[in-house]
Image (cartoon, rainbow, N blue to C red; front, side):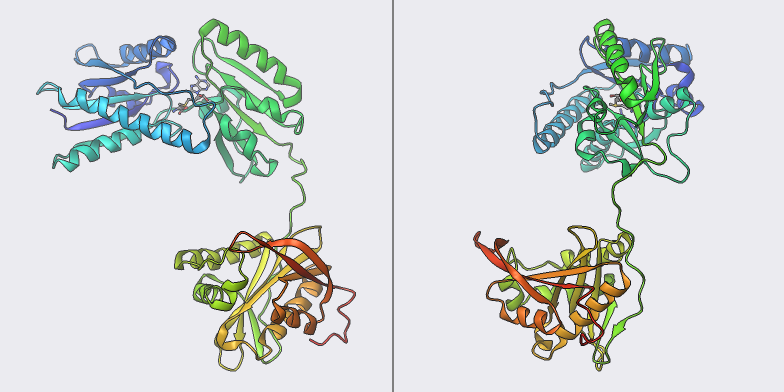
Length: 458
Ligand SMILES: C[S@@+](CC[C@H](N)C(=O)[O-])C[C@H]1O[C@@H](n2cnc3c(N)ncnc32)[C@H](O)[C@@H]1O
């Protein structure tokens, strides 16, 4: 009758990798549930058996029950959604199969164990399966304890074998799968560890990023261990050859690798943060940097008839979306992507609207967006806010040219731009989407640093 489930990380197959804690746990398990994945990876089954033989005391009786793994269709040709759904269905089928075995345990069999290759925290579904089992028993009023015991994982062993740390000083480590590498790779990620890569995806990065350093390891911790280190473009063919030979011999390859950009590798133009600023004011209107607490202003500026009329999607913002937008303002400021302000009526201290500069397009160009709450319209508030933000952006932030645009027909917005010193530059055909699927022309304006003469009213 089951009382406890233990998820035990057993390292990479060498009994020497099993921690003391895991070894003690191994000696407490009555029944090991092992997924039977067919013949293909019988070396792994043998490695697991070797760990049990080496570490479970002879006097401790246990049995191993092989549970036929539900069939899982090929992943390669699935898109992301089908892949996720496929994995979820497969997990559910696994939970059913394990529950069948557990329900049939003898009375004296109280502790069930799962042996996990490496560490249970890295790309392994056992913890999720066990959570589902525990929940299933809880739903019938039956408590099953469970715990997780850490093991040495492939990334750790890769680093140890190559005698390197995985990160550079104070820098992050990004761990991902071969499936995602090509979509997401950017040197600004820093050090990238790749697992679950059936196709050596890094080979496709060698053209664009030849100078990446590669630390590769296969069959780590086993007698067949392979290690290669070098400049990606120089060593990728050797790795490809070693992989192919090994696959031929074993029928499968398990490899993990680290990609590290050169210390001085260019990471592409990175905007510097917008400078910190005190509130900007002309005595009537004050602009202060937006923070998370401004979410109601963000919501109300968006959710009114006039704003929705000119909106691209014409949809109201939920409170959650407004919270997220306001909360991300500080981070966007720090990353130099956008400087967003709340427009405040100086006399009453009430929030009157929002205005912001987005750094986009060619370097030195900023795009301005603004909106004022209905109660504050028609009083020149937007024009004042636009003058304040334009002067600040052109004089304090390194931007040399500001742009803004509005849909044809949005006369009010055009008047604000003109009064704040912006010059109409033309009409861009079909640039802005409408909620009904049509597109509107945009009237485009600019204000350059040169045009911001001292005479420009501010
Ligand atoms: C399903 S994940 C399991 C990871 C495991 N839980 C861990 O902590 O490393 C399988 C992936 O781990 C990596 N891996 C597992 N065993 C390995 C080994 N002996 N040598 C190199 N990589 C290995 C490979 O990237 C493989 O595709």
